[in-house]
Each structure stands twice: as C-alpha cells, then as structure tokens.
Amino acid sequence: MNVGIVGICGFARFHAEAFEALGWNVVAGADRSEKLEETAERFGARPYRDYQELLARDDLDAVSVSLPPVLHPQVVRAAVRRRIPVFCEKPIAPGAAEARALREELGEAKVMVGFSFRYNAAYLRLRELIRSGELGRIVSIHARKCWGTRTSWRLEPGGGAVFVKDIHYYDLIPWLLGEQPAELCAFGGALYRQAPVEDAYQLLMRFPGGTLFHLDSAWWTLPLAESRFEVVGDRARVSVEEDTLRIEGEGARVERPAGEQMVRAEIRAFVRWLAGEGERPPGLVEALEANELAQKVRDCLEVGRG
Image (cartoon, one colour):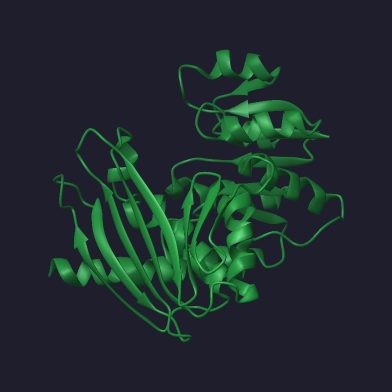
C-alpha cells in the first residue's frame, strides 16, 4: 500500500514514520521546505514542491496532510476529488464556517482527522475510569498548557492558540464526558505579542452534568513550558503525567497503561479503517463539532477585546 505525505518536512514526517512502521510505502512527499529532498530521500519518497502534482499520481492508496490549518481545506478537497482517502491533522480548518462547508460538501468521504489524544493510552484509561464511575461524580477538569512558539504562522491570521494548540481539548473533553458543554466564557487575546490572533487566554466551561472545565493556555514568552491535566471526582482525583495516571482518594494508586505511541496508534486506526476493520475513526463530523466549540471560545475572546 502506498501513501503520499503532504507536509513531509513538518509534523507529517511522524505520520510518514508511522505508515512506514506499519508496512506502507511512503512513495511521495510534498513540501516547500529547503529540506524536502533530504527528507524525501530518507523515506525513499519522490519529492514534490506542489501537492497537486503529488495527488496526480495514480498509485496512492491514501494521503496524509499536516500543514498550517488555512491550507487544510484546499488539500483535503483536492484529495477527495481524486477519490484518495485522507488523514488530516487537526484542525480540519481554521474556523467553524470552513469546517461546516467541508462537511456539507464532502459528506461521507473517507477523511480521518488527527485527534491523537483519543489514541493516547493514558487518556483511554482515564475515559474508562470516568465512564465506570470509579472517580465518582466528575466535579471539575483542569488543564494548563503553556509554552513558547517560534513558528510564525501560528501567530498570523488563520493561527491562534484556540484552533492550533487547543483544538485537542475541544474534542477531548466532550469525548471523555460524553456530552457537549452547556455554556462557556473566556478572556484573553494577544497578551504577550502584538499579533492579530490570541496567544493566551483563560477558559471556563460548564457541562450539563455539572462538570466544570478550566483551561489556562498560552504561547508565552517565558523560557519554560508547563502542561498539566487533572480530573477531580467526588471520590477520587486523577492527574495525567505523560504516560502515567496518578490516582488519589479512593483506590489511590499509580497506573501506567500499556499502549502504542499515540501517532502510531491513530495511523494504525486509519489503516485498519481503510481495510474495513475496526471502528470508524473521528472524521469530518467530529472535526466540525470541535471547530464549532473552538469558534465559540474564539468569539468570546473577540468580544473581550472590544
């Protein structure tokens, strides 16, 4: 089976590694980077400066896409028109309107969107603990995701922390709880830089079941990075530390769930889906839900700036 990688010099190189490890042939790679030839040679792929030329090949069984989000819709559309199944990194588009247009236009096309946290062994186990009731009633979820960035497009129109960095949470939290939030508020904006998009904000969501979700997010200018995630129930609290779950309260213990590295796991899910095996992975429907929720957050920040 053959795959083409669009964005092979960026994050999509990890897709290439995963496909290769699963026995697929990485036959083509597209990118504008000066490292294109070097990277393509590493995988034995033919290099392309224009993704349209890559998609024109007649030997592709799938294509993987990881670019700045403003470019995702056009590449996904082009691949689907050629009847090539697509694995696209999150977000599918840099706004809700674009994601809605893709969903309406492409319908049931074979498109998987890379919400990799769903394939992280720690979060899979956390979901089991929540759904089983072992933690009791889930009172709150707290996340902090603050670090720097040197990637210019993240701070340009079409970027921003809400869609580029935190779209994972707008898929993950409803997936963990099994419901969409009832209301939310957010405050922030371009707090660290003179940028046209937000680089820091504080978010609070309330879910119908009563759970509160708080997110502290920033692409800050400090020389350090910090990530935290915890779920607090009325029987036990769980903190996620990389591949480890630290449970305090009833049933206190430390768990290290076994599992495949999450990018490899999600590519495996894509490959199995194409083979007619396993469950349908997150696609255009889930991508639209996450984008619509992210849009509500972004809209709050726009109001806050006024």
